[in-house]
Image 1 (cartoon, rainbow, N blue to C red):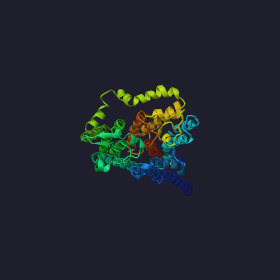
Image 2 (cartoon, rainbow, N blue to C red):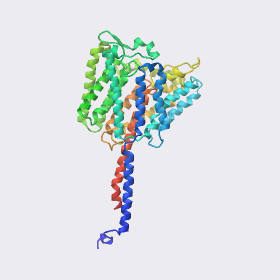
Image 3 (cartoon, rainbow, N blue to C red):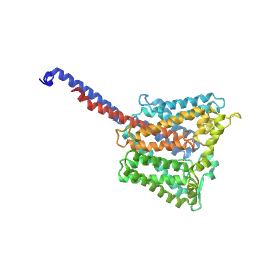
Image 4 (tube, rainbow, N blue to C red):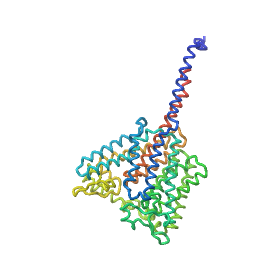
Length: 484
C-alpha cells in the first residue's frame, strides 16, 4: 500500500473552502504589503517641494530680494526643518540617524560654553546644524519608489544644468547675463573674484543661477555627478546627448570659476561611478563611460582655454606642477595643520558656538574674551563646535552614508531594481568627494550639506523600499505552495 493511499484524494467541501479562504486571505495581505512598498505616494512631493523651494530661494537672490539675503537663504533651511514636524513619523530610519543625534547633542552642549557668541548666536548656530541634518529625520518617512527617485533626480539635474548654461552665457556675454552680488563680503573682495579672459576683459567669475561669484562651479559639479547616473541608466540617445551637453557645460563652468577643489571632486566622483561598473563586472560599459569622461573634460578644456586664455591654463596647471601633498598644503593644508597643532590643544572640548560662519555674522555677540575665529575647512569648524568628540561623531555619520551607498552599488541593498546599483555607484563617488571636500571647505554648514543628506536619504529610502517590495512579492509567491 502506498503512502498516498493513506490520504484522501480530495478534501471535504467545507475543509477545501476553508483552505482556499485562508490562502486568498494570505495572498491578499501579501499583495497589499507589496502595494504599500511599490505604489508611488504623494508623500514624495514633500521632498520635491523642499528642493524646489531651495532653488527658488537661490534664484531670488539674483533679483531685488538680494538685499534680504539672510532671510531668503534661511527659507530653504526652514522648509526642511518644518518637514520634521509636518510629516508623519512612521517610516524607515537612516543608518546615520544615531550619529546625527550624537552630533546634535554635542553641538547643543556647547550652548553652555561661556565663550559662545551670545545665546541668540549659539541657538542660530545649533539650528543650522539641525537644518542641514534634518533630511535624516524626515526623508526616510517618505514613501519614495524608483519612479519618484528618478523624477526628483531629473528635476535636480535640470536646474543645475540650466545654472551651468547660464554660467556659460555669463562668460561669453557678461554685459547681458552678469548680475551684481548683494553679498557685502563679496563686494569688498570684488576685484579678487574676477577673472581675466583671453580678450583682456575682466569679469566676475560665473555665478550661474546664484548671486555668488564662482557659484556656477557648484552647479557644474552637480551637473556632472548626477549626469553620470543619467548617462549610465536606460536613456534614449537624444536624452544622452542632452546630458552630455549639460555635463560639458558644467565642467566648462568649473574651469572658468577657478574652483579647483570642485574640479578634482568632480573627477573623483565620476571615476568612482566608473569603478562601480567594474565592480558589477561590466568592462564594456566601464571603457565607454571612462571614454566619455575624458571627452567631456577635454572638450570643455578646449572651449575654456579659448575664452579664458592663460588665466584658466595657469589655474589648472597648479594642480600638476607640484606633488598633490604640496599643492594641498600650499592652499588648504596649513589650515588643517593649524587646527591640529594649535586649535586642538587649546579647544579639545570645543570653543563655543557661533565663533565662525554666517550665524556668527548675523546673530553673534562677540566679546574680547571670545573673538571670532577664521575657519576655512570643515574640520576646524567641527573642532570649534564640539571638540574632539564631534570630530569623531559627524565624520562617522558620513562614513555610514558612504557604506550605505557602497552596499547599493554592489547590489547588497536595493538589488530588486535594475538601475539602483548605478545610483549607488554615483552616490558612492559623491560621498567620497564630499568627504574629501571637508578638508577644503566647510561643506556641511550650508546648502551643499543639506543637499548631501537629501540625496543620500532619498537613495536609502528607494533602495530599502525596493528590497521590502521584493521580499513581500516572494512571500506572495510562496503562499500558494505553503497552503497545498
